[in-house]
Image 1 (cartoon, one colour):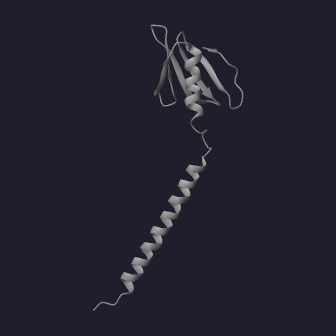
Image 2: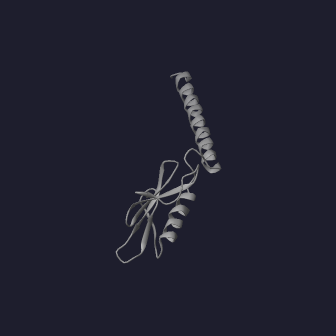
Image 3: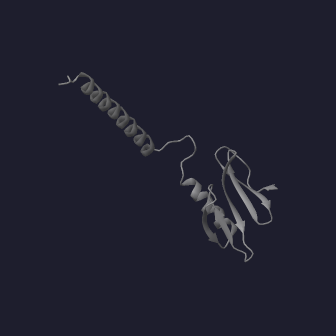
Length: 113
């Protein structure tokens, strides 16, 4: 195995695992890979092993894998929409609990005829 690009904080590092197989990582986390095909093309895969495309050159395939990774937020970094969704879910949960409490109060305090 040989390192193609030096590692630095936050930078994607490519390692050549075998003749036609390259793996990308970032700070120790798997980013994706590129596999050479018998006909000389290169297929890029994202971090979930989903193909991101078939390319004529290794560099183009690596760019596509990096692009697929860059489109996803870094681990531990939430987007605003994710935070907003979490707040709305919390508000809905609290509203549901309050409604359930009001229902329970109404049921237990209503006199039986």
